[in-house]
Image (tube, rainbow, N blue to C red; front, side, top):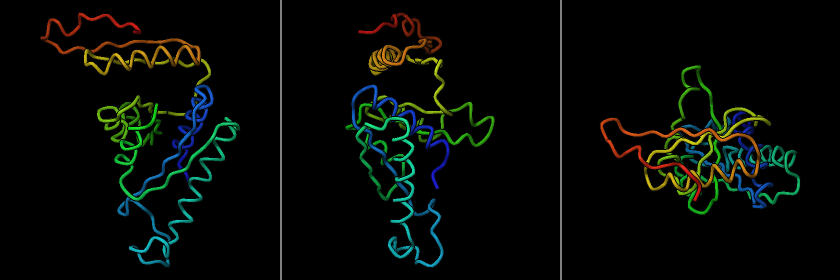
Length: 190
């Protein structure tokens, strides 16, 4: 069964792929400790434990949701054994954008980025979009940057996103306290 936050991310990703005219790649990774193995199969034998069927069902549900949103988008499916954060970080090396869903485990937890989102934001090789709920047609893009060189790419991405989807851009510029030149650069698209 595919978690609802993951399907919300799939919808948003399909919409973005359609707007950008690019392929949508659905990635499903799992590690044995976090995987619920159906009864009847030994835990070290994925084929006997029904894991291939579980993976195929998960990816098929995600593909159906993507096709509901963007029926003409080309879709690739990739299932791998390993920790999801590692698989997504690897995928970020060739992706133009990585999207992840939010679990929303608690009211406080929903205020923070999840561990996967936070890791990808710090270590991913492309922009990362953490999807929280369904796409709001009149939503805004929040751009949060500091003065790191990677911020310039985030600025370009945010302006392009607003250009493609319409809406409003809200910018947040963070700087370290006690560092006088950490806030002296303007935010603008290059």
